[in-house]
Image (cartoon, rainbow, N blue to C red; front, side, top):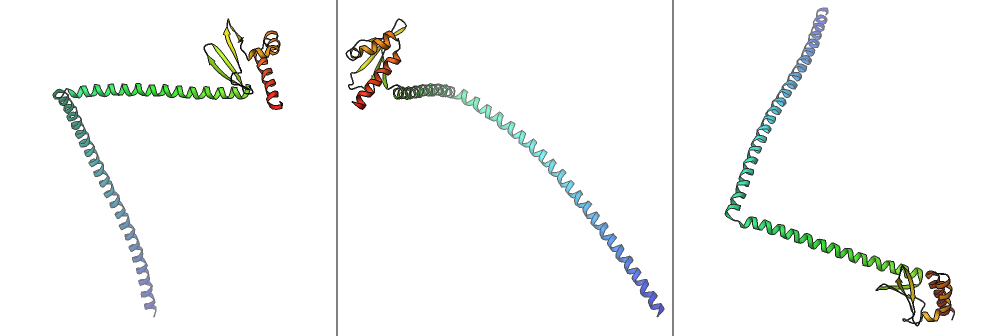
Length: 206
């Protein structure tokens, strides 16, 4: 019985020892496989890099050949067909013409924009002062929004550095305001405001 027990213990020890050896061998195998994989990858990378360098050199050589042939081809075309240079000159002239046309269009658009701006300014001035203004030959014509007739206008003329009222039929009806605001007060805005207020009252309240 004791002998069997001893043999069993010896077999268990041997079995444990074998298992450890198997584990060590497996670890060694895994390590070797990993080293082999790294070596293969390194070899593949080196091969790829070498191939890439060869392809880059080949591409550069082909590009140089293509450029040389392209330049020679253009020179041959120009020598054989003088119309080529003439065509380029025509293209340049057409380009200059297009630029001038575009410049004219820009100026025209600028003029249109200026006209719209001035129209807006006139509308603002009319709304704020109560007078439509028209400029003509050094004169400014004022037509009140509250006037009873289209001919009821004041005309001011620029003379010797100042504005003077041109006498007409409508102006002659405002002698009191002319005396008080233009002659005595020397104020055109006050005169126009007084006329506006009077016309407003007459048109609104009768």
